[in-house]
Length: 87
Length: 210
Image (cartoon, rainbow over all chains, first blue to last red; front, side):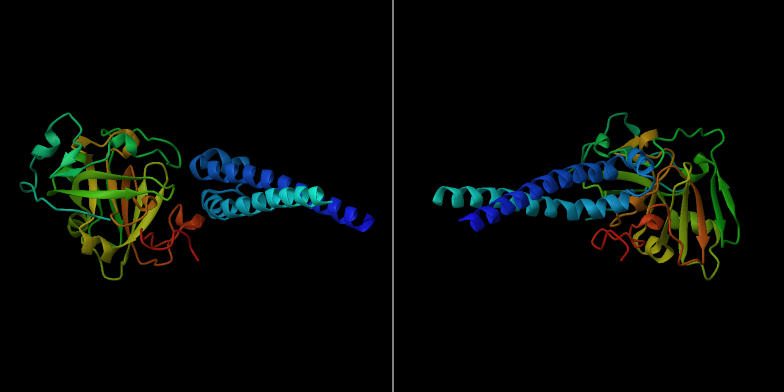
């Protein structure tokens, strides 16, 4: 029983990390989106790191990562509740 | 992509065609619906440029027999052509527009292209550059447009001249053109091309350099 609780906490913690990761990726999606359309502002603001082309490449990839992280965050939370209800 | 037609207007030196004489923007052309000029979004490297025709010259330089410096009116002296071409931007929007202009190859013919100049580099007033293969310009009758949907190009859309690089991504459509340079440098990369975008810029091809 004690071991199961330890695992449950760890799993919930992982679920929370995916939540924060989702938030960070959403913010990155927004930033890269602005990097495409408002490159005259974002490019110098990020010291040239987020130029238009780099923003566009990242924007396409980050969108998928957001969905994956969000799915894991929600999935783990639901699974954790379901396991808790079973206990 | 490039549903187009070419209408040769009256010969060199003629005035604008009937399609361009009205002050009202054309929104339908030969049964085809056109986008509004305002559908073309502003994505330029330094914002809209305001060019004075008093000082404006279109310079044709590089590997040519006779470098040219043409005034706006002199450019308009070449034969006029019209095409409906869709401009597609890498940002995700597009606009189908009636373009009227002169053939770039007609200007190049007047300058006399030397052998070994496969690359045509376009320079803009704001420092923007992009290049296109000479063979592409010849094969597709690419226009240097001065009219858009029957109206003179607004400053926001590249007045006095804009390259209508049909079937290419929007970054190949150079606005505010003030220089055409013939070059042998096949490794030349323009403004966006040197920042990661594909040098061919084919609308059906990859957007980025591999």
